[in-house]
Amino acid sequence: MYDLKGKRVYVSGHRGMVGSAIVRRLASEGCEVLVATRQELDLTDQAAVRGWIADKRPQAVFVAAARVGGIHANDTYPADFLYDNLMIEANLIEAAYREKVEKLMFLGSSCIYPKLADQPIIEDSLLTGPLEPTNEWYAIAKIAGIKLCQAYRRQHGCDFISAMPCNLYGPGDNFDLANSHVLPALIRKAHDARARGESDLPIWGSGTPLREFLHVDDLADALVFLMRHYSDAPHVNAGSGSEVTIAELARTVMRVVGLSGELLPDPSKPDGTMRKLMDSGRLLAMGWAPRIGLEQGIAGVYADFLAGGPQRGL
Image (tube, rainbow, N blue to C red; front, side, top):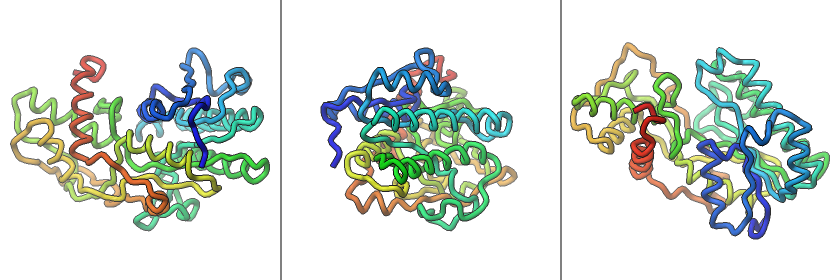
């Protein structure tokens, strides 16, 4: 077991939804958490990253920093998504090796898997088929990060590991309807409907596609668990292991927000992928399990949304 107590632990991307959750989770580990803003450290600058790591001397690193965005952003800025993410992960992993960091966790994304992978998606599905074209630039960069960790482990004996989360939600999510994911978008739409005095909630498509969701605080707990208990080359899926239809998800959001009307599916709009479930059996078999129920988690996210005020788009 790798003990984080008393260690200096660097969390890159600490202002993001995942990075901030990792920082919250580490508060109970008795470690010193190191962070740096974008103004303090440009993670795409190799020399700057090497110098910062050499100066701060972290013993453990979480690579949660990344350029992220929705389909439109991926399609509009493919070079940025590929280059920036490659540089961030390569600079951090190389610096961690050079400065003898004891352990590193690289955080990937479920988009690394083939578009038509068998469900539930097992870790061995990686590189077995074509990627989803709308986010392949981001996916290719994340696959490279996994392979970098495996290569440094193989060639240099580094204790570098990787985890792949399913769809995440939680405090600090993006509620901008133009580029948010399905859950925060539903919360925003339901909130706006209630503010207009409406009681019904329209949704895209039939409402029948199945999705898996994991609260970001559960993910952070899983990542700390893996840092403490896992040391091997294969990446590990991190999901809830349960799925819900978009219609069931929308009705849960309606209950939380306080809409008492009808759910209004729009079959003229696309459903997207009908099912996306990751097989997290490897992680669950180690003894970890999620703790935050979906409705409980959504209630917390809505409270965060309300507390955010203008920056949430209200």
